[in-house]
Image (cartoon, rainbow, N blue to C red; front, side, top):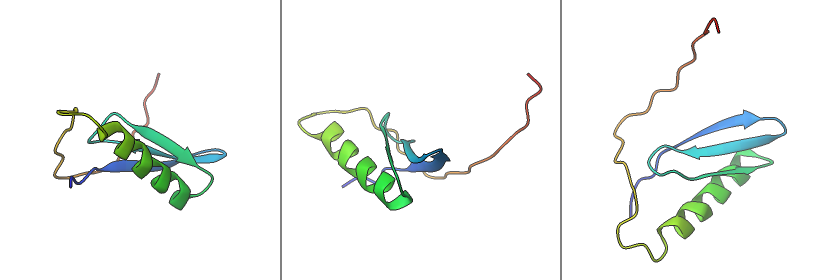
Amino acid sequence: MRAVKYCLYREDPYFVAQGLSVDVSSFGKTRAEAAANFREAVELYFEGETNPDYIDISEVTVGEELIGA
């Protein structure tokens, strides 16, 4: 078992679950659906892989900045 961290955000009309520990994302109509779809996508990502890319992240902070671009 691995703890796979992800960010969940709204991108109308869906919720998106974007992996931070693995390069996987998924979406759903609700937060719960997006999280469940993400879990399934990550399980498929790890399936059959002997050494898949995985980043062990210990702390997550979500921020927002205004950029004048």
